[in-house]
Image (cartoon, rainbow, N blue to C red; front, side):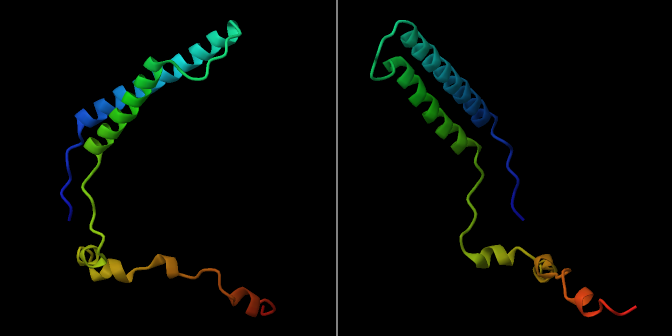
Length: 110
């Protein structure tokens, strides 16, 4: 059985900060584009501070996800199968067939 880890509150806080930064950069982009529309200006890109904020948010999201993520599972099937009992392996509800031909065969029988 796998050992349960305590959730990383630091990772969750970093993800929350990254989300707030991402939201703020989106709001700043909207404000910048509405300002350009109001003055009939044409610019080929976003200001540098919005781009830096956006890249910082993406980087912080990456760091937060790494801090929150659980340990990797083994790829090999043998290690996962060794953790299960024979009773759990033998019970396969996906192979139960409830939609069979019985009602078609015995349709006229009363």
